Image 1 (tube, rainbow, N blue to C red):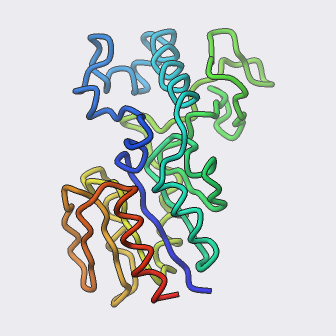
Image 2: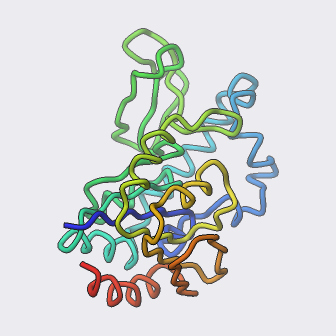
Length: 228
């Protein structure tokens, strides 16, 4: 079974109704979004940061996986599918995808502020001051904030290096280090790029599908079936 690696970004979840940072115009309730998504913001006003992520988590409860997510999950019938996503939502998993690596953390998880290896699944959208880990420390969102290292990158690189087919969907390929992953595919690997804004991929054997996630996946499934 061929290994199909999927790199997904904000455009993947946009069709489900999730707002991206770009949708917010860089602002949230008059706050600069980058100012509520940094370690410095957490030090300065953890209550504000928790409220920001609680609102994002609450919105996630109100949306469902879209046709694009469901189409990707169906590809597991034909391929060994591995998803590397920049998204912090759980829509890939809810659609049925079984191998998902989150580069920038997971909205539905929290972690200890004294031990980063203590990570907890959240059962509700609210994470509040006073919610503590087993070591007695306040829990924080399990999110990679601006200025923090992307610790899952080594795993992502290995996955991409082993790809027989690469599918890039819903990402502008402007956010690093994630955007650099496309440079690690083996020479000659078929690459499909689904995005209405056609982000440029400087590789050979690239097919562009200038559509949103749902429609783009409809079109690309026909092409992938011939490669299985």
